[in-house]
Image 1 (cartoon, rainbow, N blue to C red):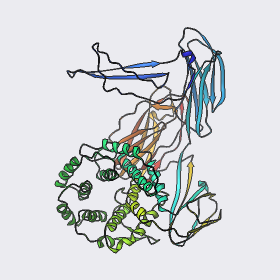
Image 2: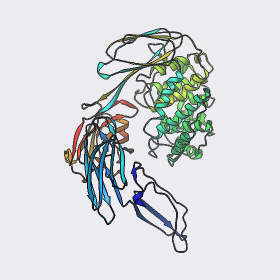
Image 3: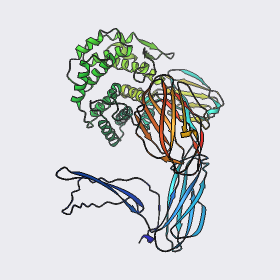
Length: 640
């Protein structure tokens, strides 16, 4: 019986079942058997039906499952440190008798509340929760009867810090004999230092960051796919029996589903077509095919649309991208005709000229390698790169992307310039100034380009020594090496040996009371009528106002919500945004482009739990260049 099935419920996941092949019997009824995820549930059933004569209908219903005597708990899905909220415990009696029970609250396995009561229909208990520790608060509410029966619920509530984390770091390529003197900011906390001798260890760090990246726009899906394929290549090289079949197939399916009707891809889902993102996605899918994965690419659709666009009067930059797309999927086409037309232009940027030379290589057409080499530059460390004449803050056209094209051209060429490829690779490592490359696209492009050479051109082991003096004195002969130290003293690092060592230093620090930051953006958040006192049960709109001072592409807006609120509705996006993602503690809004001007975004909330809550700062940044950002201040919200 129900009274014998004592339990403390702790699994509150959402489940669904799908029955697409049901057929009614002669009485117009259809049956199937399923198992509900728990003995207390509210199961919503939606039925769509169609007759042989193409008549259709739909209906829905709810199936409620409960126990005759049970205890439930209601509280926010997350908290911010020092929030104050009320956990609500509810004991429900569906029998005809009054029942004597003892109700209890436990916080982090410690009994905080206990009370003997008579339950006629229901009992409501409450408990103040004010988390001062971080990570998680464990809350349990349950009832007990004298005969040993018990029932209740247990929930783990994540507790986030007030403010936001920031990181300051540097990356150094120590080539040959080198000495560095480093100073650190005392206020930013412990310094983390690690040294790597093998470039593959640096690549592995980047791959893990790519694979674990939070968001899943089409560029990032393609970057993750390239990362998994690169990780498989490294595993094969190192004779490790590990693959990522399931993850790779899942990403391929998502990218196939996100393909637009014209055969190309946009930034998010099936948003408007973008050619550099389409190229990036196609590169990843073609690469997956080379690795033996099955990919459904509608090549004819891509070819038809690309050729149709090439026949029109089109932008030169897009013509080069379209020709590259066609060549990626090996479409037979008169490339020479269009390449000659573009080649005659006097308005090509350096990167466009480089892309055209790369196309000539791919099509076995004549080209001049000196056109590339004449554009080379050197860093202070003697490493080689190729300048872009565009703004370096354009995600797909900048110094690094131009250098990667030059790298691929030189590698394909049989000239003596190939001996300089290690110097170009060292430039790319030199650009990991903040412990990582600039963004997901950049990281994936670099790894895809240089990894084959890192695997084919393995350096022989040589005697390397790194000496660290200052806070701690170390003489290091074995790598990798990791250490931490206090930031209040200058350190000196000396390296000897013939091969590079890759050194990273960084400080993670938590800005618990960030002040308003303005620059190319301004951002403000407020509730309707500018009030910070909300009424439980009455919907409210959280309004975010953004001032954009210069045209901006690929913008990400992070909007935290108070812990005492849930989403009243997850509204559709407005015309100034391409995608939204809802998390328990924040909403992320993505915009393809915001031209100079003022913008407003709304989030529909429902205050549910009385208490005092922290509203963390809203933040706006360029997704691919996050140093361009702004935020507002912390606010305190009251729900009564």
